[in-house]
Image (cartoon, rainbow, N blue to C red):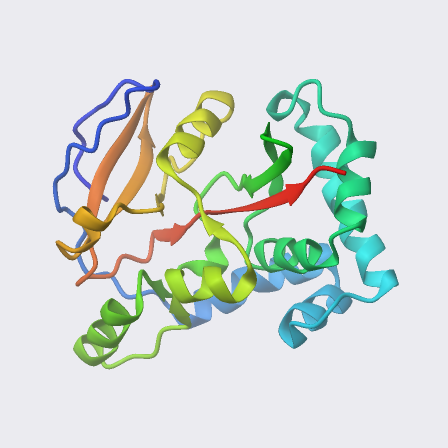
Length: 240
């Protein structure tokens, strides 16, 4: 875990930064077993669609929309005054966004609408802990190559390339802070977030987690890997 220097949650989340993540390679078997649980929830059809990375069939679109609707109705505190009918209409007009949300879903992100901003519905990873299916990822290509050589192991990829491939954005600290006000996240894990260039150029990334009533904003070394962390992402859907 990063260091335990507390920062009160609010608009002034400061990047006071200490490098504290130590190497802790993740078990491939553990990832496989936990993803099997996700597979059981969303069904074989959606897993296959995600692996193929093509446009979802109408049947699979309906399956995914049903999952998203159920979560939306359960987590109404996250999106007061937003109506599902409007969200669904926007999603159906943007099938590429459904494919992006599918990628978040099958990797354990539990995406849901977290805000409406400038004519867009913003979906974000709302899983209680960092998405289990993205924990075998480095932060960027350079760190991936370094870590694979250092640990003599294969990573599934890196956050920067994966986000671009899936058509998602890394969640930023403002979005993460707002979400932490509504639900408790990362009490036993930490999440990698969008990182300013000056921090990234120092071989670090922004990592956040919760310690009791505090949200901790810290740095994570890109040159080490911790199995408790994964990147959180957002998907922006234009409102129609």
